[in-house]
Amino acid sequence: MYVYGKNVLEDVIQTKKKILCAYLYKNYKDQNYLDYFKKNNIKIKFLEKYEMDKMVNGLHQGVILNIEDYKYASLEDVLVNENPLLVILDHLEDPHNLGAIIRTCEAAKVDGIIIPKDRSVEVNATVYKTSVGTVDRVKIVQVTNIVNTINDLKKKGFWITGTDMNGTNYRDIDYNGKSAIVIGNEGHGMSRLVKENVDFIATIPMKGQVNSLNASVAAGIIIFEAVAKRELG
Image 1 (cartoon, rainbow, N blue to C red):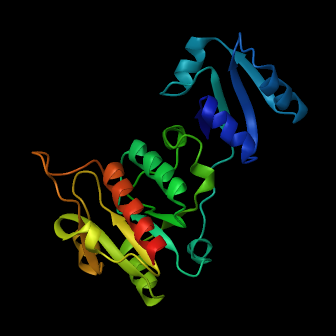
Image 2: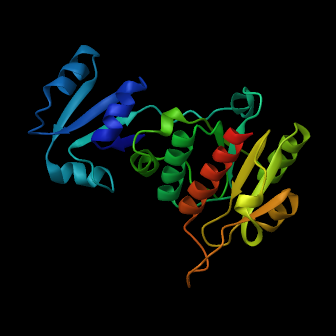
């Protein structure tokens, strides 16, 4: 997997992900990173800017790394705490939204993110870049079926809160105990079956003419409300 950018480089080194090859500007001058690559026997290829521009679609800042593919966690991995807080993404498609939500989840110390394997964005280079070095600090689980996973969590004592324009004010919902928050697709929201299987529907009241928020913005608002409520007990 190709990832890129200075922040991603720092995060990859800190989390000790295996780097297969480093692609750098021909005039790359950061000696600390050059020494790190050489010390760890990481292959370096110096390229022209136009060559690097062809490799990735984004601002690479003269650094592209070929790293091992992202390793998803298992559902059991995110259930190790007594009362986990999870975020379930119902078929999000935009890698920028996923990256932003990962960053929010890391900041809020969410126990894990659950995404479906089909018809959904995966962890890719854009997600790495948008998450600003937090992808490897949040456990992400890929599941075959979101509805089945929700019902499995409910059997384990979880309360599931979905998000929609028509529901209960998000501030009036109890997020204590084992809790999971569902964020719907950017265009269609939660799927019908997912909506039918959640316990609560959280709504963020809109004061202006806009009737909905970007998925990552809505996720951030509700996640931090949940964290605040959980801290109060």
